[in-house]
Length: 376
Ligand code: MG
Image 1 (tube, rainbow, N blue to C red):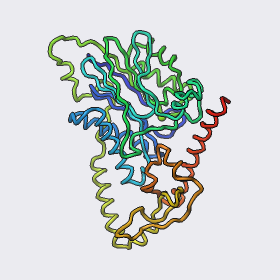
Image 2 (spheres, rainbow, N blue to C red):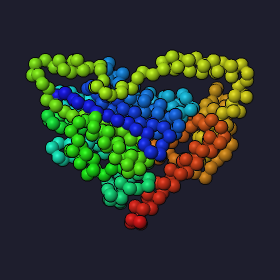
Image 3 (cartoon, rainbow, N blue to C red):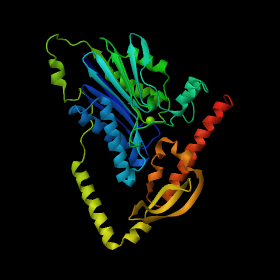
Image 4 (cartoon, protein in one colour):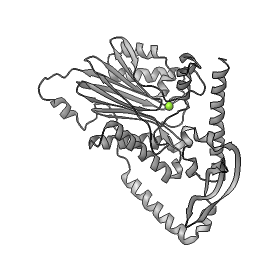
């Protein structure tokens, strides 16, 4: 089989930056929806796809292994660089091998298969509301409009390890695949998506129309749509078509560039230099300016210093113990590294993290109440 691809990503009508990324490097296609505020989301989605792309090209392990390595790459970056601490991303990737589709998936981006006029969802959302639907606590329709529908139970890069969903689908000539982020599915019901995919023959045209309609419905999130048309190979001989496509993005697509290697090298040099200067000008001063959120006495707490002990010597002190039980916060997808300490830029930054934990817990509480008490 060969693939004709079309893809569009758009910032939407409300967000300031686009934290979605996509990868179109035949035979590997993927979308990723980053999260983690400001820079974090953009870095997470791009880094995940760059890592996956590089590992896939070197044929290192299975596709699921490659996703787990990408997870570790994002996690390690978030630990090393406090500007992107706590970042994460969804990732839905499709690799086409002859007439077989291999799909790997983490988060709430989605893959769909249009065969004939029937649209089938191939992935399951890793969200709290999806779990509520599975347990019969709310309906699918309620989940689709739920104010907290984007609270994830699984994301890439928030923990050192991640569970990856894997699927395999036998492809037929004429099949059409859609990979998309929740900025599309949050705006358009599946039936509307099916209609557009059925009506618009050109894959790029279909991707553009999906994004335009999602914007028309409000565009409250970044929107990414990738449409992949499966065609029987023209030749029955050696798979020359695949050979020639290998390594080149399909026409009209924007590959993720290996950007700013020099910038990165400089950032590392600057980081190492900064560390040396700090050591010289006094570790105490440095420690006094460091903040993180961790656990003290079983509660989420704000610390000054860094979360390590050197030969029994503590390099931190507790500044505030909150009322939030650490056990509750650990259940949230983004705060699993709490026991190791989540770095913050300042005391205010640390308070912001605590506020975020409170807000997420309140959101879960609210969902729980809805589930217990019927529907509003
Ligand atoms: Mg999104």
